[in-house]
Length: 489
Image (cartoon, rainbow, N blue to C red; front, side, top):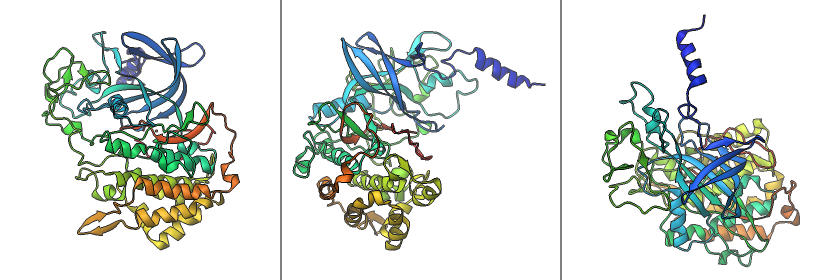
């Protein structure tokens, strides 16, 4: 005999409105098994035809980020775009689209072009009228949940261009290195040993011109970008102000949440079931009456534990720490090392048994750990647990790994109970080290190992738009390889 509660659940799932079940009514299937995503730009409705799922977050405790690529025609011009849906904190003063506009205004080169940003609107499950999708609205549908703690988030949609491929989808050793250089310097001219250091340093420019630091660099946030012409190498994105993490469930109600139809912001404790929550998207001015936001202090760890600088991992969750540029540079080293430990060659993962020893202990962690830096700093750990797993294909990178290890990782020391790093190691030093190795690569390292099915010319990389992100991504490279289980944003 079937339990009555089970019957209620089955009937509810069968007959309940899709929006109440969490389905997004702005995403609809087409007759040929594709799907379209609806956006409203300047009062006009457009439908983006989706062609590829780049990333979908399957974890229960996350920002629920999903990233697609697709095509949309706006004003009779077709655009190849990247669409990113994510649940964002309404207390965050700067949305991703707004940051892209700030970088454009500051003259930072090598960043994505914002096509559109909006809050996703869906019909209210009970009242039927269109309202900004939020966890607040979903929570009101459950009886007895008014006093329960929850994360207050709204569903945001960002559309940008151009499109790119994950950096672990590289075709050759040279492409991998050129991609890393472009991530660091955002060159606007072809990269070569003679010109790489003359490129406009995008990561540095975001600091000096726009006062923005990425703070969430990871293996999944670096993209190789398709250039329209072979003589242009545009960096895709090396930016993002990733605000400090805050558990909204512990919010005291001191900060202001904007509500449609209200002139003054409300505290979270004063939200009503029918309130429509607003965030200042890219095309709107930042309201002056929002009160303090969670972006006002940098003294919080950001990113995921698997891709965290040693100092940030050592401090741990919830402790004060200032995230600086050298932390991001440390992560670029870990990304290069991780790729060497993950693959035998492009699109060819190491066997699972090998990954359990070479990769998993360092880059599949879900809690604070300094095992990677401790192992790298130890001559014994470096020579027995790291270098032996670097395949013959990646052997030309050993001198680069050794040099950056010496200049960036080995100087990390404890002093007076605090970790200290080599603050003199800059983007230019990192780029110069890569260029020296790139110039000495054999001809075979420039030859693609897998057929290049991409449309266009891959010419460099960037940090993707994964702010809380990012950009952030179980991704499947176009070559068909599937990554092992790795904790994601």
